[in-house]
Length: 592
Image (cartoon, rainbow, N blue to C red; front, side):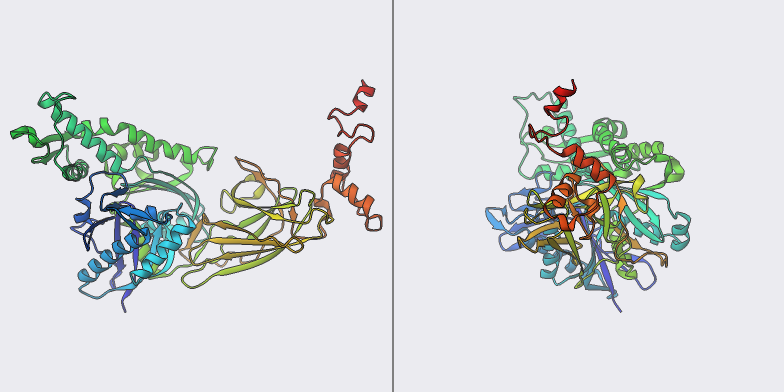
């Protein structure tokens, strides 16, 4: 039976892989390299991959004439202009997927790949609109996405799956943290992961799209052009123009030289008839050595490695680098000797693993996930903030997330503890760390939504119905409406953090929600929640509002807690000057 495939549809390169019957991974490469994520339109013809890349005259992901490099990044847009024609970016992505599928089909002599069903990797930050458009693009190419997986998780799963005894290694690293350091052509992505109860779980992510390998190729190109100008004494006024399309050729040579320098001390860059000039002045011929490469790459390398310090800093993960079990380094840039050296200085030889298949490990991981079909679960509980800053778990950690055609729905009734401004604030958060007590952990915000309520209602009387739906794209859609005002509110959350349940564990809790726990707020704007899950939680109502309620409804008087007694004294207004205590109250002058 043919196996489902794994697809890494990257900004710079893309690749399809499949697990064979012998337990090996086969990747459908082009000359042993992933396919460039480039699409070129020539009349009615669609050209993709390496041939299309030669049409690009710039390194940035974008549209250049009739060529689109990295079309995935445009999926959240309605339209892009390609060669004077407005195109839906979803259709451009479909053309790229068609090309990858047809190439894999032509190379699949043993008929081992089921090209109709795939596990597809996505960037951590891909928004909901982009995910929906990506699924549609694949469907238009006759491929059904079985599940989305974040790229760093796929890389780490692929690494563990390649080991002789995956289960033993996972148990050996139980509770330990790993840094996945993925430095490719388009971006540098960092993800801190932890092994917990046999699951590989995300903790925190960080990315930088200004230090990718494509930017370094551009810097190398400028260096080569400048050295050529010096060689022939060109000045700014006598500098010769490039011939059309030659920049793409030189960029390809710069990329090749960068790869060669990972194993050799020097590499020759040669492009004939590059400039509009005569004789030798027209030809680019430059010997690039490691020392020169390190010098011109220093700024980018330093910026990239600083991202590790930032991710682990107290403002983010607050993790000591010495506590990490190891660093998995992937992507083409980590093959540079200077980057290897700097990573070794940070982690040491024992804790640094530089993948020998860094340009395809994400695709391998996706193929293994397609083969093993492990549960993809929620790494951290999805929580709502209750009044007085306690937390209620809506979807617990370890909940299996939907795959193709599935969805998860849960409903909840909330009550507004302080309706005086006509607004109920619903604030959604997650712990920053996994399985860490709330009193010792910061919370990271998913977002906030406001639900209109009747401001004349007593506290805790108007019910707010809240529905949470997690779909096959792993997007949470929150819908809420109060029963009296009946104004619909909606919020979409797409940055859930996942776990892959690599080995079974019976200790994972499946309860719907835990009891309230006090939280320690993280950095950023603090939104004060004013809702409760229980319409009898009178201790959550502000003390000054409780006093007004008791005065207005004497037959329904509620006892005040010590905190509410203090609040109603603090915030009650003076009967003479109508000012709050210690806010310009006339009684202060009497005391003085």
